[in-house]
Image (cartoon, rainbow, N blue to C red; front, top):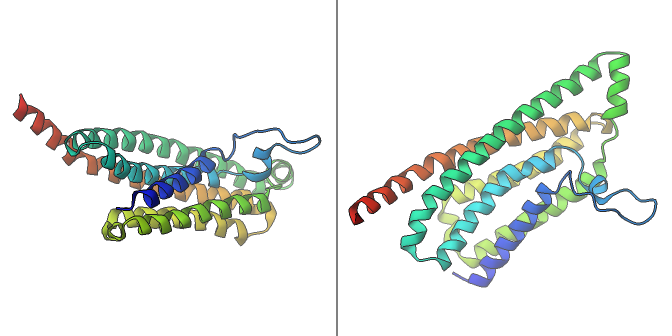
Length: 232
């Protein structure tokens, strides 16, 4: 493996993930009279929810990186337990975020259809979606992910034979494309609704992959327990 290329790939994926989790609560003040950076570049739920899938991808690649530094015997023991914990926490977070997205989507649709007063409230609270700013952020995240893919393959082409990793990468790219597509599908005043739909779909994808990691960690845990018993 070409370790420098792998290190660059890991850093690029980490940057994409940190943009995801900073999506709606970064609030750095800018110059006089300007909006905070968090308001300008990171609106909606969709960008935040990308962290559910991107985080699992970052964790998976991070495990590969740890295996380069830690002896195989130690790595084999901690991998199963760590993956189980990450999968469980991610599954809980995914379920909670799915419920939040469903609740918000219900509120927005109900207001929009409750003519005239509910519609007026919807336009006051949700119609002004920073579509262009979101597009810029999504483009940056996609660029980081594509660069990550390039450096990962440059590090070792055998990664392409890892079907699970390839599917997870494709899911991360698909999630990014989905948010971008749904933002551009409808007029600006409806983007808040389609953004919430995108977040809901990504939440489901995150829950599925969390469950895959959770189940996949069980054989490693059982193997580690058997080794411990044999040593005892």
